[in-house]
Image 1: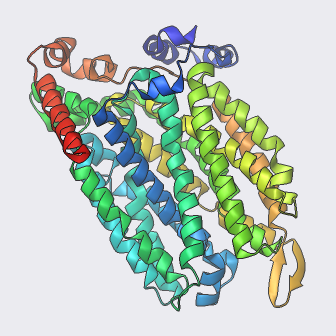
Image 2: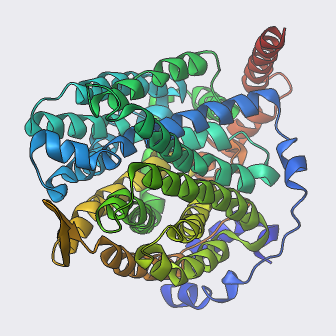
Image 3: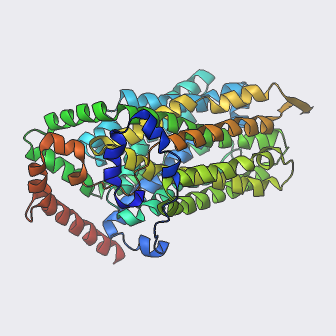
Length: 511
């Protein structure tokens, strides 16, 4: 069974010929049927510090989604404000996705990828959130279409690195048995942020003389509290261990550079695969969500209240699906879980895009259950596939480059949708967006199923530095044992100090 030795599976996969590797894809898809304890018992395995790490990552990822969906939920208002078509306004969505990739790739030294792997998880996280505040406020004060596009492009750069940092902060210290369910829960921060954006859009948009702007102004406020929360927490244990090994090896900078060379030489093919996989997953989420509020309002003539309720129901389905499938992947395997739920999602596309009544809410619930169910496996799947020395960089960069590839999802759908006109409602032009979403998503599901089938899986991989073969080759096994295994080593001292600090803060908060 694959379950019994994931780290040996990694070495085996690396030495297989292409033909032999492809021949193993179907047999290794068989569910391992691993024993999974009661989910509440799994969650009880986390100590206070691990819960705080998870919570700050979840909140930050949720607000990342909130900030992103502010444009999706105000397309009609922005079209009127700037006198532009829906397709032109959706460029505001496309630019965010495109420039998120630029931010991750070009500015890794000040953002979350390379910075978080080299300088820790905390300070790149803080800088990122400061940029969120400035640029979300700026969007709310835009007066021209060019200013709007410029602000959203810059905002995309600021968003470029949060995902990898959040995943590492939440998951790399957590108990192995709880990873599956926590991965699903973390990913649902995205759906939770979308739900919050839907509710606050109904409360803040067109309810004052400022129109759509209060939603963006409000979006700049919570990151202040998120920054304070993160400043109260230490670095993760996994990062502290890795940093201690680098110091023990003589030079932190030279060891880090050596790790990078080894990681790229050994894992460039894996990184390429992860970018292609994440392109499919980003097409899946943005293709099913970004234009959906516009479809409900434009094609099916839903009121603002009906759109809000439908979106809330859909995101409740998303949060449920991500948690359930993320947990199930610990039993049935990562690849099998993704493929299974993608097939179910494909079967639900017809009612999701072509039910012209309030009954579409049920289809929206179950379709987003499937979309975010597949996504619920992704944080831990990416963490397990990524080389330890550059885990945050690989997770974040593959996610953001996947975003780059899929960045035009909403623009593609809206442009094609305009080729299928419906009878206008007064002066408002109407289009068959639902048909386009269903066809588009069918193609995306087929692509994701194929890529997942062809890819590797290392469920249960150890994240501790002593299990990192790249680091063993650079620092030597003796240095690893001396640094990590000693009773009085730096790692244990720092870990003990950080844990006691967090526990004392927790007691003070309880009092």
